[in-house]
Image 1 (cartoon, rainbow, N blue to C red):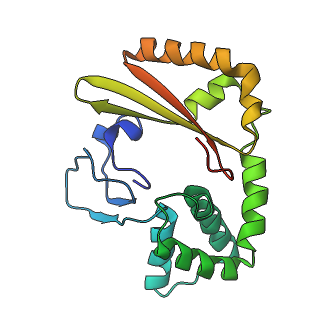
Image 2: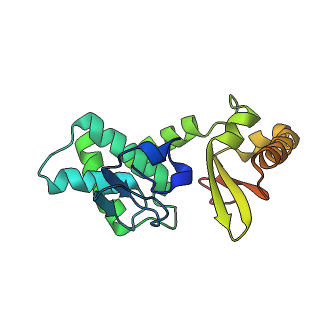
Length: 190
């Protein structure tokens, strides 16, 4: 399991899987295994930071392509260090990876975020089913989704449709609440 260790965030039929390794940067939750396993969890902003560290600790230099992919993941997860979960470790590892990948992190981030956060070709269904996690707090079942964009005004024409779909989802899943968080990446507004 990578970047999660909760049953409700994993694949269907996780109870029948033999989990042999977990690499994560989230809280430790409710995963159960049948045997001992390798478990590495660190309080960093991205699981890709941990994976890159594992390359370096093993004396393996990632290829230019792998360094680029890991860089993109760290940039995405930390919002190019704007996320409050960003650590100095994320910054050091990204610096090392971007040298291998031969990319400028700021320029790369702007291109990546602009391409990845455009809402123009996304349906309301895509937005509410995308980056979504379910939580149980006491007796309440809560669904939280996040939409990241550099153009929040693109949501205005579909706001009513989003609200209706969110209500349909919580009714269909027997949940109490669905919170959809819109994050304006570079203006750091929610």
